Image (cartoon, rainbow, N blue to C red; front, side, top):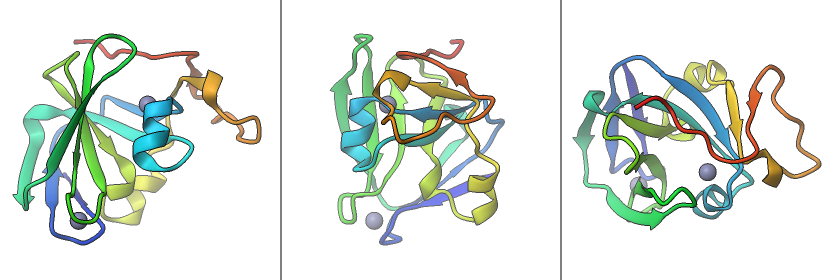
Length: 140
Ligand SMILES: [Zn+2]
Ligand SMILES: [Zn+2]
């Protein structure tokens, strides 16, 4: 089981189940909401998501595929802990930076990179990771 928390500590969530995919995303939305060049995420079953403490705010935006992505974030400190797509009610995209414990991040090297067309020229591709020009959708 993984536990995740925001910067101020008011919100805590846990995730149970197997990781279906490890993704790095270079899309412009990921840049904007993270404030960085990309995001790194784990696909986990939504059924295993449990709120342990606090109430996360949500923000929903339509993405290029016509689906929506809803960010779940702390209204006080701004940390986004996970995102849910309208594409599937089965999985949740968990931001690896919020996960507590250093080992999970160590073990979360992406197996697929999305929107590599937006990756800055000074950033190297992840060795062995599938390279996708645009989006990529998991099995329903
Ligand atoms: Zn917070
Ligand atoms: Zn993205």
